[in-house]
Amino acid sequence: MKLPKVVRRNRPNASAFLELTERELCRIVLDIHDGPVQDMYAALSQIDALQKKLVSPDDQDRPSPEAVARSLTQIGALIQNALWSIRNFIGAFAPPEFQKRDLVSVLEGLIIQHEELTGCRVELAITPPIPDVAPPVKIVLYRILQEALSNAYRHAGTDRQYVHLYSRSDGVGLEVWDEGAGFDVERVLTQAPADRRMRVGLRGMRERVALVGGTFAIESRPGQGTHITVWVPGHAGRQ
Image 1 (cartoon, rainbow, N blue to C red):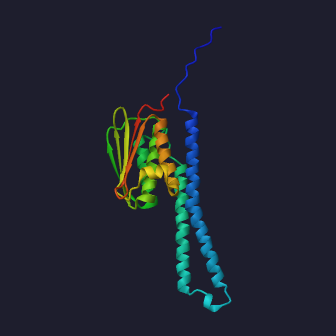
Image 2: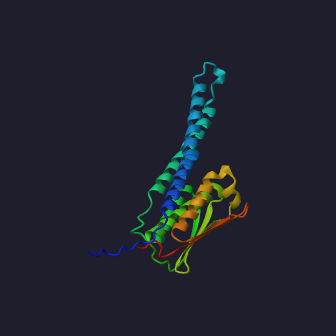
Image 3: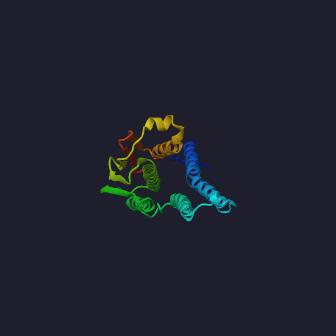
């Protein structure tokens, strides 16, 4: 009996997916360690110090009501920051329904969520028409925008960001920029251990774009803001 011919589809390299997943897990661990864990640890330390002063047998060591109020305000701020970080993580792990929603709706929802969580203002410009794209492309652009907005909020020192979505050369272009502090891209990517979280995030963005056959570029200098440009083919991810 003649067997049917097997047609093999070209698929992205499995090892590339695994490496990207490991980088994403590393970034999440860094975010948790450097964010809510540190805030909660600092809050607990302040609570412990305040408690020891309040039960001190020496009246001179006991804090005044004003000092207690200041300590409680600081503790509350630390807990509030930790809760914000946790809410942000929940939002990241509960992405929109990529199968049912179009690209514009997905990115608009992310921007609204970012503005509500951070108080930042994001100026979104859309140059129609935006083509219908496959879910993998939506996921890549969603994650790129999510990381770019998060990095700007953490490091740029500005409360305003800009996004431009447009079609180009049978694909979709996305630009994200700010006029904030900027940074030395080469130093972050190759040298600075203190910027480990940002380095992982930048490499993750580049790898995500490469997996769908797109291009990624970032321009930034200290004091001159940051500009990210992404292009992905509209047909990527279609079976």
